Image 1 (cartoon, rainbow, N blue to C red):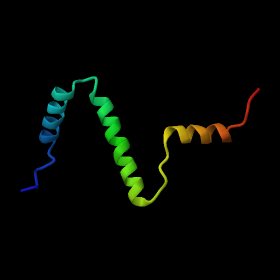
Image 2 (image 1 turned 90 degrees about the horizontal axis):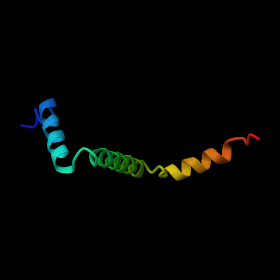
Image 3 (image 1 turned 60 degrees about the vertical axis):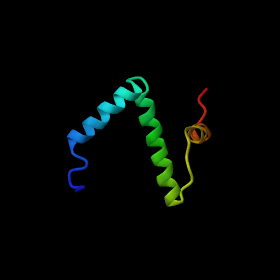
Image 4 (image 1 turned 90 degrees about the vertical axis):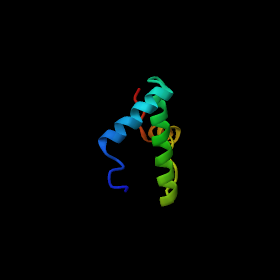
Length: 68
């Protein structure tokens, strides 16, 4: 029953419906949010601390040598 669940045809159909519902401008933002949510969920399960963009920028600025 679930053998043919994720065929390319089904995935294209779901993508087409999502495009109709959310529109072409909102779809990349939704994908980005979904990816970040899944990444945070996986890190939470593994017990790793969550690293955000602000934290990584702070770490980069602290370790980078100053150039004058």
